[in-house]
Image 1: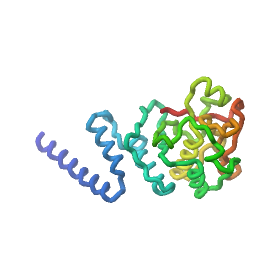
Image 2 (image 1 turned 90 degrees about the horizontal axis):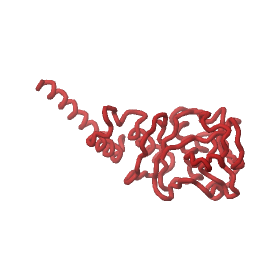
Image 3 (image 1 turned 30 degrees about the vertical axis):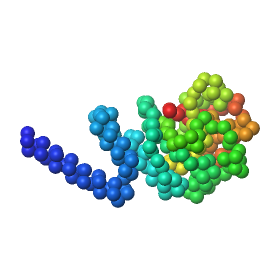
Image 4 (image 1 turned 90 degrees about the vertical axis):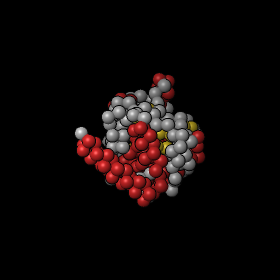
Length: 236
């Protein structure tokens, strides 16, 4: 038994040294590692590996890299609360303080063709259910390329009346960018994501889709309801 314990402790020591080395080199984010270790110490991860792909800490690290490399934003995770992850919601969307619609749309434009009905997204999209001006936050959504049928034929007005939480335009564009960086593919090739968490200055609802070889940002009326225009549910 002693030999087994010694072997395990030796393995942990080697892993610890490797972890420190990777943090020093910058290949792992120090804040993310610290949060993950604290969760492990507090036994919040149960028997699951809290740093494995699909878990919050691994996704946070990936988001930090995306913001740094493609948006020029240094993310501060201090005081950021990660919502509890319900079944079926496996994609974490991190919305960093300082990120703007124009900025994220430009990042998309640098990677693939884009088009927007709006000349200035920051100016023209005036209402959002959540805004990173108030601080960095995170949401969970379903990790699906095509928005699912759960909210088909449901208008933005109906979504608001029922109190359903759905993605904003900024959250959707961030997901579009992240998905492309990971897969080289695009969301919403066959259907349309209704960004019911946002409104333009005239009360219209932005929507996003991939059509005609480009990412399109357009709008519809808040009472419009179609089978292929669907909001993406979000968990706060």
